[in-house]
Image (cartoon, rainbow, N blue to C red):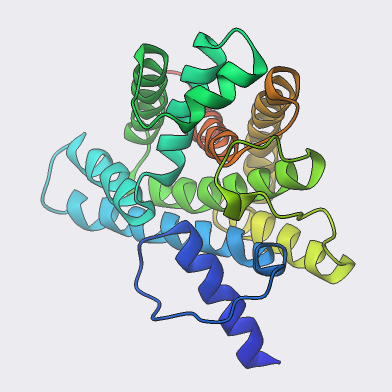
Length: 255
């Protein structure tokens, strides 16, 4: 049992990051649904590594360089997986006039004006929010935000049908999570943030971030009748940006 859970965790780690996990063979057809419960944990790990880079670099470098380094580390660990999804989704929803055209744009590897502006905006928001915080607080916000953002993506997968036209590996049904798997997903997505930030700060920031992520999901339902892998990336990035800004406002307050 323990070996199987470790194997599922490694699948989630391989799917969401560039971290070395070794070869994984003989994945079952429902591997995405079975490994999804560990995706918030993977997010927390990404946030912890990026947060540690902020703390360590803050010893030697002046503001805002540690924050920039932390954001770069997070992007490098994930291989810009979510940022690519945000750009493609924004290009598709901004430039496509029909459902078919929007899905076609999502399949196009080129980035357009809408996608470029979305990436700049989200990175600027996240960077400005983290710069307003002390290094330790910035690291804690990274951990909480990354874990919660993966939970938001899983909720989107569970609530929306797959729209087609995306990457096949994210088209698998994830709405059939067992009660115990749902409990693990919620625990791993919510507990890290409540521990490192405190329940009140985390809940307030998370509610705003989930609302923003939910808005992206609703737009996706209207624009393409469901989600794709790119939409999940957009949901993840929007959650992070709103969570970072809200948490910074709650921790540091206005200046």
